[in-house]
Length: 373
Image 1 (cartoon, rainbow, N blue to C red):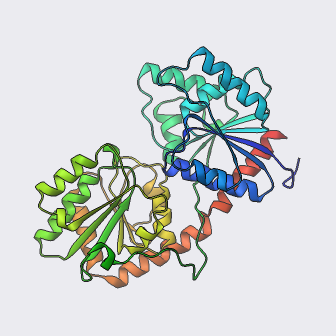
Image 2 (cartoon, rainbow, N blue to C red):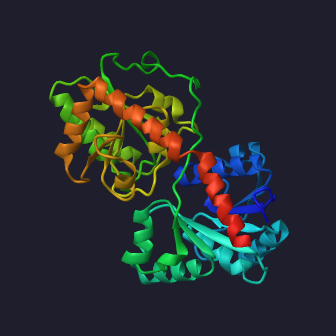
């Protein structure tokens, strides 16, 4: 086999509900189809918001519609049938649960190779989850991790996988060409003060993302007399709680909850500063998209973020529990447009050189071919 060989690739996920993992699958599908491969996406649970985009790209979509809890025998039989009918050269799993069930289904089907991507740092300390992970990882030929920190979590912290079975493979995004114009939003449309420094973030409104840190920082800046506004793009279980906090802090007039957006780029383009305040991150796609839009970034120094962001060069870092440092970083960028421009331009240069979807897909494809040899 060589690089011109057309492959039959099956991507396995729980669903295509919109997140960084799922968007990477979309980009890999698009790049695979552009390379002439046959691409299928198997959703174990339900299709999700990105299913239509996957099909528009030319990939085949199949769904198991698994019920909550352990997979039933009838579901396992159907899963095996679906994999057999697809007859892939490569199965690429994107969640531990997907790898566990796919590995079991593929055991008797002589699938040439199965790979798994670990997209974030998960807690494998519980015996049940540790057992499932051990079985899942044993059934795959290669495990990719989106950052060295994620690889260390598997190999060193939890001792689930030998280091020689791991490879670090960064995420990538479609980088807009110079002069590219997306659908534009304006401050006038959203009723945002033209003089305000506009901060924002993209991600699930979930406990691990800790958006309350950003709300508290905006409140602190407002008390200091700064003109500020915040946009939160995303949906999730913590939305009501975050809305209540904005009300308690008396900044609800300074916060715009944008909800789920299939294409977050127009919202990112509107920002002055992109911010992530998470407790854990693997390699967030939203950060790469902010860089692609030439936006300066302020992030917590957790997970794979210190590997990505060079302090003072491509962004500003703050310890996760140092609220004062977060406020200071945000304030320093508000008053220094030259620094914002420099950080944003450096981020753009970095993402175009190292983190394009084309580069990521090409590296994965070379890995597929290497296994098939």
